[in-house]
Amino acid sequence: VALNSFVVVNFARNNQHSCADYVQTMLRVAVNHGIEIPYVTMEVARNYLENVTVLYSGSHPVNDALDAVGRAIEMAKKVYIHDSLNIFRRNNDLFKTFCYNECQCTIECAVLPPRSVNGSVGLLLDYNKLSSTRNPNAMSDNMAMDRYFSHKIKRRNGEEHYARLKIRITQTDTRIDPLDFRFSKGRHEAIRRSNGEENWVTVNFIGYCYECRDTKNTGVILDVVEEHDVEAFSYIHNICDWEVECPSLIISYHPDKDKALYDKVKCVTNQIGGYQSQIAVAETFERQKNKNQYASAVLTKLNAKLSNPYNKAVSWKSICEESVGDVDSIPWVAVKPTLVVGIGMAHGLGNCGKTVVAASVCLDGGCMRLSHCCFLQQKSDIISTGNIKDIIKTSWKEFTAENEKCPERILIYRDGMSDGNFERADGEIANIRSAISEILSDNSATIPITYVICQSQHNIRMVPKDETQGNRRGQTVNVYSGTCLDHTVMEFGALSVTENERNNYDFLLTPQAGIKGTSKPIYFRVRINENSDTLNKQTLEWCTYHMCWKYPTATKAVREVPAVKYAKRLANQVLSGLENFRYGGSTWFGKTFELINPQDADENGEIRPYIRMTTVDGEELGNMFNVVDLPFRHHLAA
View 1 (cartoon, rainbow, N blue to C red):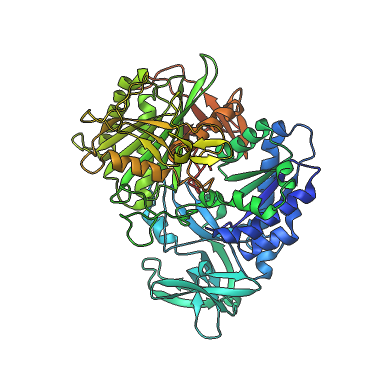
View 2: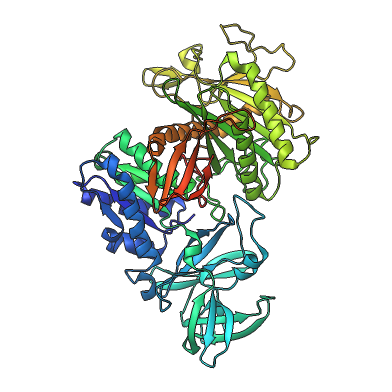
């Protein structure tokens, strides 16, 4: 995974040196976590950090966060896209990033900075790959053809051609694509492909040229035109027609752990701006004896944050018996395409509050690469019909686009449901079936569903029989990580785990190794298991336990399944930021985002709040029911 660009917002105005130290330490340690830092990005961090840093000097950071982050993004675009520091021109390199358009296609690209075309900026698209995490069939035939070309050139003899920019790396007729070329560690490198492998090798940069091809068959080369033989040119793909990811990451440096500022920055970056962010606290960083170790802990989750359809990075891999080669795998999940979805909820205060329903879908068999969606509803412990259908449809679309195949079975982990609502869970399961039928356009289509309710709010504890059978940490003795209770007949209030019932899959699991206090298990209640032919109780327990080790934020097992933990975390983030969309909303780069509470019910008889997007002139741009939607990145809650 690559960190192509970054920008810094320093709210700790009295800690400028500390902020610079943090950024440089983080980038220096990043390579140990498999994160590629382009040479020009390191040069910016070392020599031009002040050019990508907004130093906040006001007295109301929470109120001014929107403006501060907006100014930081403008600085990043000036440095990386418009090459205001002349870094890319000086090194004969291009800024590599990702772009996204109204056809909902995410494409790797290189930015063609302003030269002589009235200051306009162009894009050179990756014509070999096309990744769409939203709408795989949306790209038109014309666009699919045009994505090969980068320029329309006019030669000095008057001839006009459609062409693609190329780089000469020797005096002979060797031309390479700019996306396969970079400036690194003081030298130019190009990708050499051999026996299915790609390696960077040192080359000599000679200059640019244009490869002209037939517009109807891009496989036919018509001519190669040298740069000095071009009288004028225009860009095929203008940056104005695309959303370009710049920066890849917003680093926000805070003086302390003020939650109000944290919530505001997360709302601005993730929900309003659509950017990934990493927040650091000055007082925490400064008291570290080993700053590299602190940076390493932060970077553990950066692989998850920077993961996208091109950089399918994971922080670490797990191998099970079902693994094929060195592939990240979870028992049972990796055997065949399985849609694993974790659902969490957060409730506002009072009867007039909103409920935020968030979901995480596992994109791979290792359940570490996640994508998210988030919806609003009237306050309720039960997910509305429209929201549960949209969760399944969005998760299905993300999974299918990522794996290029449809899921063959579904595993749902549902948090936030009490014993009294179990019968109402059957309504959610029916809505899941209805959503699948609508996706497949077949009312008779059947996809086996396993629906597991995860109860964390209870008074049940599991302790070792004696001190020799537990995990001692100081004065505390807890059960070992992975302790599971599923076979002893017992009755304790609502708890009833028994081996005598034929279809009982319920179990208590303590995945975490507790350090302080008594570890609290999660009570997993299986409402329905249509995958029972392959997913018996032991396999489900083993699968669930393995998932608890796939939490990119920490290198240890966590109490809840990460898909659920991140869903709850995202739901609480969104709930904390809803105030920014009330009373006229928030304005961001010419767009206004406002929370709308409709008075009329929809076709399902439900009232579903949404975010309305308008221009500053009041022209409607659309409604967002999914209130978090990053086109470039999957993981929001890490």
